[in-house]
Amino acid sequence: MPELADPFRRRMLGAAVMAAAVADVPVASAQAVAAPRAAVELPPLRRVKADVVEVAYAEFGAPNGPVVIMLHGWPYDIHAFAEAAPQLAAKGFRVIVPHLRGYGETRFLAAETIRNGQPAAVARDTVAMMDALAIDKAILAGFDWGARSANIIAALHPERCKALVSVSGYLIGSQAAGRNPLPPEAEFQWWYQFYFATERGRLGYDKNRHDFAKLIWRLASPMWTFDDATFDRSAAAFNNPDHVAIVIHNYRWRLGLAEGEARYDADEQRLAAAPTIGVPTITMEGDANGAPHPEPAAYRAKFTGPYAHRTISGGIGHNLPQEAPDAFVKAVFDVAHL
Image 1 (tube, helix red, strand yellow):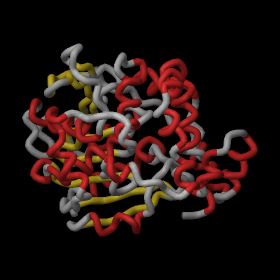
Image 2 (image 1 turned 135 degrees about the vertical axis):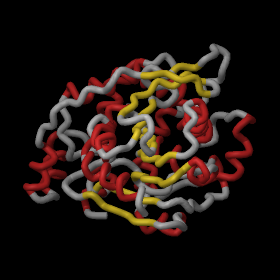
Image 3 (image 1 turned 45 degrees about the vertical axis):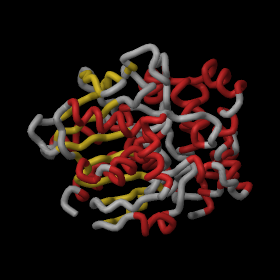
Image 4 (image 1 turned 180 degrees about the vertical axis):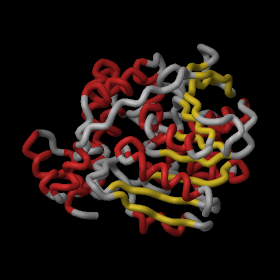
């Protein structure tokens, strides 16, 4: 990765550091990132009961088109796809963009259900949603938690995944892998994971979730000059009553500090073996991704079917679908024909 990806520089706060980051890319690229984009309104949300949750989702396009399911991550929401989804709908796709458990208007059906954020549980929600909507197979496309869910479904249920677009590549992990210490600079990138492991972190995130998420946006996408209105549209999704519980459980589970549910044990056992993915896949990475992410060469062998990788230039950070929607749309369109 170029110097811009140095974790120490990615994580430092302050205008001087951000200015230094801008100086590392051509001026034309920085100006392109700074260009304002008009807000795109989402259609009225629909709802469907899917196993333990009622999923709230936006839908675009004709109901009989090939299905694309777009999955967001933390701390983002369905507005990450507000530009990409209509473009794909215009190309004939049926696009479904759900709020993950703990986000937006997605709700648990029962008060007694464990607010479980383990990756296998989050991924199972998407499969359950597909079942409820009678969707046999779909192209899955996502980033961050959404890419991880898409990876899991493609690996464990390839019959449900026509093709895959995964920002930051192969993101399947396990508690055993999460317990392994990393080199100091890599550990430094995960500062928020260790913060969330504490009661202080849980309380701090609950109290300051708006400002916390905005900080993550800035660190994860140091070249992206989003405005307050863009952030606030997504930040509303963090007011979900289960948001903090899901986020904290997710990161504590990864470190082996929180238990999962027995119903997901079989899935976790398979995922712990780091299974390969054989469906047609395009992996993507922004050239200015400030969030922890593996190098493309590290995961190439995990994709055994038709495959391509694309690094998107121009100061593109972690939220690639929202920062570079045209490139994301092209990847989804192209993977459908791999």
